[in-house]
Structure formats: structure tokens, C-alpha cells
Amino acid sequence: DLERTYLIRTLQGISHQRSIRFTFISGAVNTCGAGLVHDPSHPSDHKTMYQLISSSVVNTPPPSYVLKLLNNNKPLYIPPNGQRSTPSVPTDTKEDMMEIFTHDVTGQPRDNRKLMARRNYVAVVAYDPEVVNGTFGRTDMQRGGGKLSLAADFLVQGEGAYGNVVKFGPVVVPSL
Image 1 (cartoon, rainbow, N blue to C red):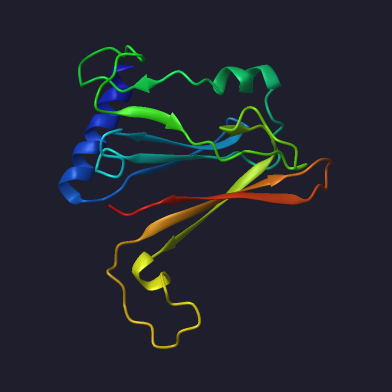
Image 2: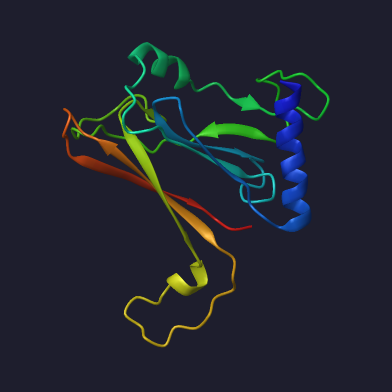
């Protein structure tokens, strides 16, 4: 608990000093989703860090009761350095999961929209928003500002061993 808080607060300090955005890519939980740690009053400042969660395509998803437990709506906050976590006590940094899975691969609406328990992978692309915005079809493209953002698409396998793949996203991680 204290180590995790120290890591998050240290990375927030580095992000502030260097004007860089930290993004965590994680897995081995046999599910997919996207979360962020952020300051609710300043949603895009240096405290904002994204987490992209995926798993290897061959792993079997966890049981549905595990996903129900993880799809909670309780607010979680990061305490100041050196203090133990009391998740419901508001601080300047909050943890949230993004609701990107509004429907299942079958097209049916879902109640648990934060995590998808199916075989999946994530495709991440870095791009310069200044170059991409408004340049479709143009041949006289100029160099952008050099600040790269990320776009992550979650590709989730449908029913059966050879089910079609359904794309969810993109989750856009803006540059700082």
C-alpha cells in the first residue's frame, strides 16, 4: 500500500517536472479494460496516468463473480505519501476505470462496462495530434509539435475458438 502510493506520487512528480505522461500497460489478469489515476478538478494535468489492461489471447477469462467484484463503483483515492490508504477519503488523486464496454461481442448490452472477461489483445498507436487533425487527404503536411498521444484499441474475441474479433475504443491518452 505505501509502496504503491510512493510509486504513483513519485511518477506524478516526474511527470510534472519533465512534462511527460505515464501510461501503464499491464496484463496477466485474463481480462481487459482501461483505467486512470487523475485529479478530478484538473482531469488532464500531470497527475493523470492511464492504465491499459490486456491479457494474452490464449488465457481463459476469470469467472463472472470475479468480474462483478472488480466492476465496483466505489470511489478510490490515492493518499498523500507516507499515509495508509483509506479509499473513500477524498484526496487530490482519484482512481477510475473507464466504461468502454457498453455492449458484449454479441451486441447485447452489458451491466459491467469497465472490464471485459474474454480473450483479447490491445493495439496501441502513437500519433501527433497536430499532424493528424485536419490532414485527411492532404499532401502538403507539415511537421507537428512533436508531442505524441496514444490511441489504444481493445480487440476482443467473439464466441467460440474462432469467433470474430470486435474492436472497442479507442482510448486516447493525450500528451501532456
